[in-house]
Length: 157
Image 1 (tube, one colour):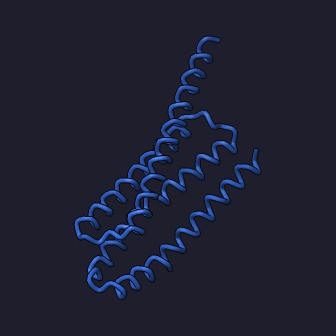
Image 2 (cartoon, rainbow, N blue to C red):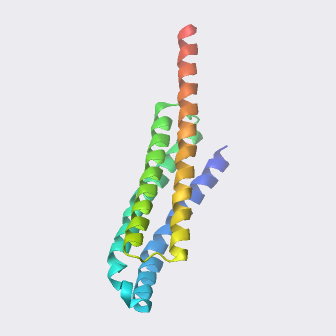
Image 3 (cartoon, rainbow, N blue to C red):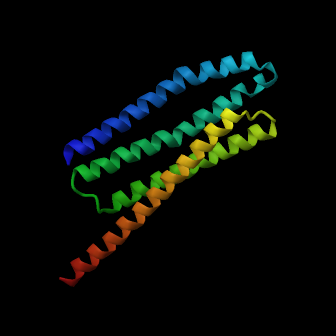
């Protein structure tokens, strides 16, 4: 089991590194190039960058909670309150990411600046965030139920 959780922790780490590198190098470059290519929308460069970077905060917090969750599984204590709390936090971070992207798309719609590619990317992020939140909520309830059964069995003996 340890190699599986180590593999998943490594995958989460590399996801974080890749997204951080994209945020540091690719996103500002794309914003600059887009502002040059479409001077009519150049005033949106900083609001869009701010929105992307604000969305990254809950993303990295969710990755941290995922590593904590994998550590609990690795230590063979998956059915604890800490696991339920980590899953709850992941669920809420997914909701925050979804809300930030919905607000960002609404802002871009209000400025008449939504291109099909931007819309599809935003929709994919929103859909992915919803799926992660729902999955975390289901796991949270399952573990909460398992904890209740465990406590009941402990009291019965």
